[in-house]
Image (cartoon, rainbow, N blue to C red; front, side, top):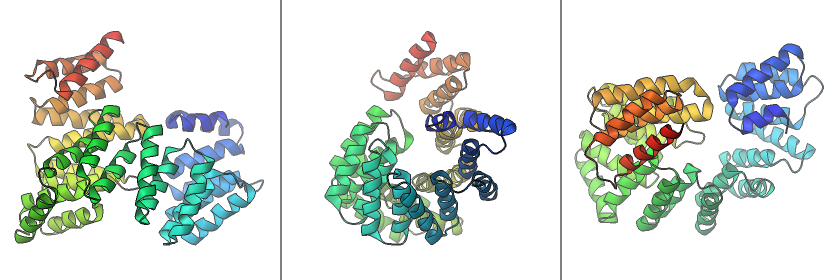
Length: 395
């Protein structure tokens, strides 16, 4: 793995971009730099520029790297056969290239060729046993194919080997909830929150499951009946949407939210449910989720929840895609605090954002506000604020 690839693998995208540009300024035909820059450009959704960079990288002939990029471009354009052919070309050149087997599997599942897709995804997972995404998608497809025992086992393996890989907790809990094992689903989410404290999607799903556990079938049936009898009641529809989210019924939730939107009856809660669906897509549709949260903020000028969740989403985007989203996260979380100055959640999230932005004095100020609230010692927000206070003191 060359130095640029190592930067990408470490998630240092901005540095990888800067280093690639420096290399190309000295060596305009440097293939490694062109490939890395093309990958980063694809992440930004700029297909024409990515294709231009790929063409330059292929000046001396295609390689496994450039063919993978060609396949990625074709897949994003919806050209499944073209992408599939490119992945197969990589496999012919490099039979042990795990990314090619994985890409082939993803194209095949989109063409409803489930058994072939499973073979490719299983091969990718075998070739790269440390890759959480490969195993995660294998587990998802196994579940979609009705291979429940295998899918559950694969997702549990992902959690065991990658305890901070959040999507696996959600998929496993949704699968268990769909099989009416709500207690098992709840335990999975609680395990996830131990590894990733206060993650909003884990918390949200756990809250809904905890309510539903009072009577699983009755809760869902009652919510469905109420929503059917009150089709223009936003609260009834939002309640049903939350229960659907707990069961992983994202498409049904999106349909419900869009229907209410078309009737002019959207609310903050419905927009937050819609945003959750976009975040659950593979890969996450961050732009759509951001837009949904923004709409939720506009629908509830005094509400803090959509602003708080949007701030947390922007923080995750900053961690995954570079720091360009951090400034906006600070602005949004400051707005959440303005709307609800006594709520501990936005105060703590703002403190975390200031700490991430290397503004320790402001972070300590927000932490003190959280600790001054009348929260029990066992409260998770208070405990995390105390941990952050200690970390800031050591910095």
